[in-house]
Length: 215
Picture (cartoon, helix red, strand yellow):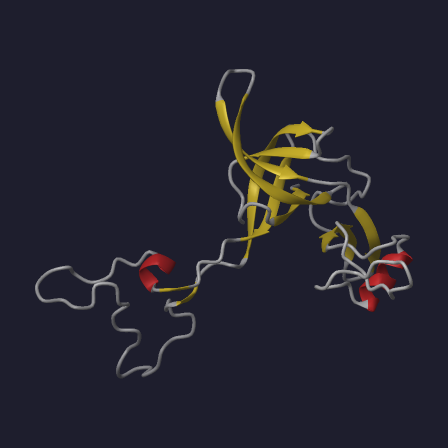
């Protein structure tokens, strides 16, 4: 499979044959189900799913009701039934087949030594200023300055007399899609469905990630 949905468990370390200590991210990758195959002139992709969502059940005599909380919509249940599943997957991701290195769908599952790219959602840090968000140095700490962590002037006065689009300003920091490329698979534990990838990847513990082969 060219890609697989997994869950980030955290980081650890492994030792290679040369005795070198290698920091690794541990990803739990349960077997994925192929929900759909898209093949058009503009896009060729596989839709993968993992996990299960709770479904609505009509209570009958002697049968327990489904606990309160979010339940899968009928549209997702119907989409899962077309793929032969009894319950809608909790997580769905698409993997393109027309990317470099993904020309063949029969590429084997990730093995030790493979180069991969991992896509995840970075940790959300809320509303932050420019010093933390972009690493701007800020103003002086002495000589009567009172704007230590302010961005300073944000636009020219005469021409063009406006703030340029894309100006680095305070705002929501983190909680965005991040793809780490050029990572190496250091170890695969098939019995426990674990993949050890060198280095760190975006996201908190138990965060959902997508591991794809890199051509």
